[in-house]
Each structure stands twice: as C-alpha cells, then as structure tokens.
Image 1 (cartoon, rainbow, N blue to C red):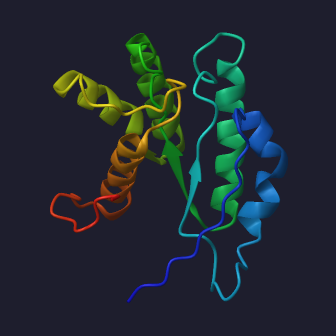
Image 2: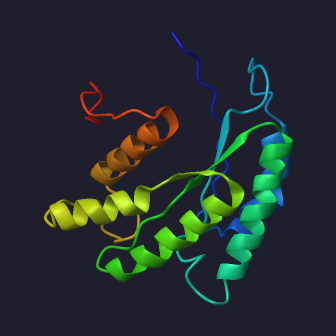
Image 3: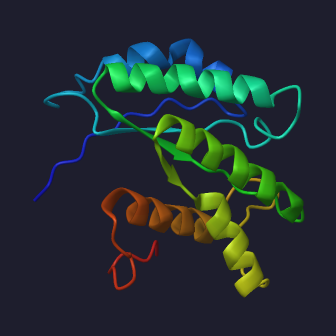
Length: 167
C-alpha cells in the first residue's frame, strides 16, 4: 500500500501574492514526519478572480512564476489548480482557462482543469448543484468533481469505476 504525505497552506480569499509570503519555507520544509525526500507535487491555487482583472492578472503571473521556481528548486513539480467560474457567472470560465493554461504552458507545469470540468458539467447537466449557497465554493458534488479531476491529472487514469463516491 502506498503512503501519501500532505501538508496544506490555505488563505481564504488569498491571491498568489499572499501565498508567496509563506510558501517558500513550506515548499522547502518537506520533513513532514517521516517523509523521505521532497514533495512529489505542490498544488498552487489563488483567488478565483486573481487572473481576471488587469489590476491583478500581472501579479498572478509574477507570483505563479516565483512559487514555481521555489517548487522546482526543491525538486518538486508544480500543479496549477484551475479554479471555476462562480455560479451564474459562466463568462469567467474562458479567462480562467486561458490564464491557468498559459501559465502552465509557460512553466511546463501540470494544470488540473477543475474550472473546465465545472463548465462542462454545467453544460451537460444544468440541474447539477456544484456550488455551496454562497455560489462560489463547491458543494460536496463540486468537491467530488474536483477530486476526480485531480486523480486523472496526477495519475493519468480515469476515475470512472472507482469505489469512492464521497458518500
């Protein structure tokens, strides 16, 4: 059986510049208990509107590059967590997809296309509730969708047929 080590640094509503303030030490300090060696991957995700405005988009790119350099220096791989459009704001999807894809291509980083999966699910079944009542954060179903996207991104295989159903 495989052993998985994880560590989280979350800042509610945090832009990548906010994460960059404490990320370097956390990325380089991979001595999580008995963990041997550097992190395999470091997942990077900022505030959903971060890459969308002309005021904040440059900071998204600059800090994405900075964090990626720390990840690479530590011997790990960057995975960008593409965020989703807010409920009722599907026009956010295109710019989010472009921002995360462009940065991923520039950095040679994996992109977990969660935002694209949310949009595809919305189109395929508009009655599906992927959002909490705040219309920004995911419901259990939205979280399950994101987890499946990460499984496919990280392991290169489909999650179809998995016994895990998120209850």
